[in-house]
Length: 355
Image 1: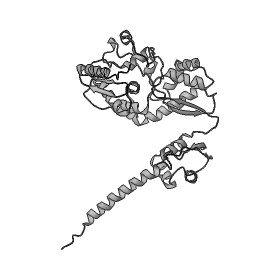
Image 2: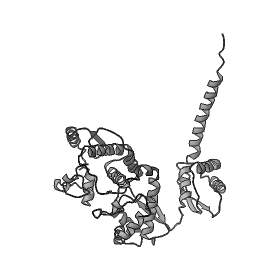
Image 3: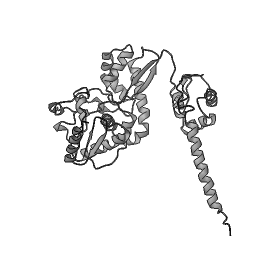
């Protein structure tokens, strides 16, 4: 029996393939959390002038990262400009990306620090309540600033994604849809409202940077679309489908017919049903109104998550014209009005209607 000798090229390809798999596995391991289940705070002080190499050594000594080498490599690959001196609270459950982002942003740990959490899907009025409840500024102080034309114009000159479209007299709050939902930390309750807004706009700038080449011609459209699907959808996948539906409806000259825009137009609580007359209200936000054929609402109706922004920029192409959600958040897509009506009747018959 003659034994076949392996061909050198195949051997080389095999070794190369195995090496790639091994390197991929090692990369995923070394950027993963040291201990996903350990959420205890670990205090770390990074002094001014500390080198990147030394920061990596400190983090490794505290068992916050898996590898000093990977820490430096990750920073180089991601072109991180600077790591800020500060006092931090890290967790072993944080990934390498989270650790680096914290160091890059320079979040200061202060046991007396003010924590403000702004959730996706909420309106400017909701954010004003959060600020007024946690700071020395009143609700009226926040709302007044949000409508200050001189202040808004100064922001437009500083942020590429804020355009003159937000100055339309019929827009309720010019910054609606542009304040990045997140948790922010400030020194204390004396923080100025302008400082809070700046942090949120700076964060939105970071979130939108990857999409700048796509949305720069009309960021207002994308932020408005994102705000609608934030409330209509439940995850990135169905939001992308919903944007596809809305684009189809606009191209066919239909109303968007989005109920959530009516609620915003009326500044109504979305926990309650509306009447037919309310849904027919003529308002530049209300896409159910007869005069809104083929039109987007005048502006965003809430502040959107990363998921919704991604959906507005990169939607799915489909041939659906309708969708409806049941009370469990499941969304059904249909192509014709009769199919849509049938699905609505089915949802109601099963006791799964929202109201």
